[in-house]
Every structure is written in C-alpha cells, then in structure tokens.
Image 1 (cartoon, rainbow, N blue to C red):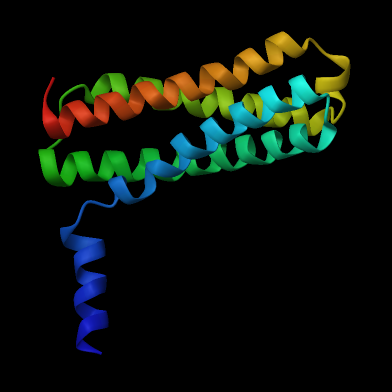
Image 2 (image 1 turned 180 degrees about the horizontal axis):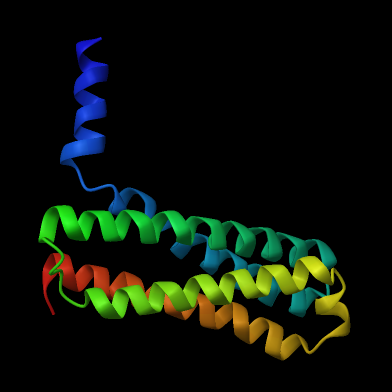
Length: 145
C-alpha cells in the first residue's frame, strides 16, 4: 500500500504530468496523417476512417496536453517557461484545427470521397506539423536551443 501512495504522490505532485500526456496528440496526429495519405493512395475508405478516428482522439488529447502544460508551467516554472506564449497559441491552433477537421468529417462522412482530397490531407498534415512544432518548443524548454 505504501508503494501505491508513493506512486500517486510522485505522479500527481512531484513528476510533471505534461510529458506523460503530450505524446498522445503528437502520435495521434502523425498516425492520422499517415492513414489519410494511405487512404488517398489506396483509395480505401477504412483507412480514411482510421485517420478520422485518430484525428478525433488527437482533438481530445490536445485538451489534456494543454491543461497539463499550463499546470506544469505554473508549478515548475512559475509561469515563466521559455516560449510559453507561443506554445499556448500553437496548442490552441492545434485544438481548433483537429476539432474542425473532426466535426466537418463527423457531419459529412463522405467528405473525403466527395470533397477536395488535397485540402483534406493538407489539413491533416498541418495538424501534424503543428504538433511537431509544439514538441520542438517543449524540447527547447528542457534542453535549450
């Protein structure tokens, strides 16, 4: 029981939670981009559905990553983490883009088949690039520039 209490204390009070959560939006946007490219190449509706599912999960995980990032900034850097304002702006943009893609696709399941595939795939790629930019800025906080 002592181990469980120590583990909970470390995870919730000592160890920053943001690094544990932030990998989800990065991986999910990357997987979504890969699946949409494969769906376009193979003309496969199942791969497009996988891309959509990953993008919807990326939108949700961005909320948690952003929340834990702000909390860790306040707790560990007293609100003065390097590039914090840029990270907040990019995180908000990532959330809006992933949520917009997900809502548009949810409202029109045939969006990929009927719409402009290049624009749709570009939005997926842009979300992945934003996630990678956020990852780079997070690395700057830990390791410097």
